[in-house]
Image (tube, rainbow, N blue to C red; front, side):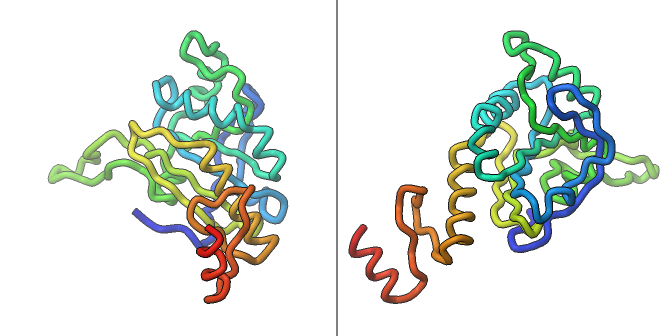
Length: 210
């Protein structure tokens, strides 16, 4: 699994569905550089079980992300038509109607591959036939990207393990705190706690108080 932290986030140009039903061509990551932070998260498949719980969880906290100048973007290897169909289905029918942030269609799987969250691998067999050792879908990857387009935090979960949206918000707060104050964020830091001056005196003072 590649570590992208500290590196420029791979850009892409892909089909996407915005605002719960609007098709957009050539949706890019580059459009947010210098303007917004980005939380880019991958999920395995439309019309599944754990995935809608995550999609709705991000939607329920969307105002909190927007307050922090963060654009939330979801990606899976489904088509834009599949995204659109799922977005039209009510929650009680297994759909995700009401989700408004962009859903990107990584149909050719290059985005997932570039972020190194694509499950399995493909190869040519002895008969020169293209094969895959598993279904090629995305792990539950999440990437926090700063205003310069650099990945500052990443998390990758296996398929059955849902993520914590509150933890994602905490990491956004931590990144913005360090940028504003020039201090580090110690273990279990949250926005109600003080930061840590990265000096011998600073760590001694922090540990004494905590």
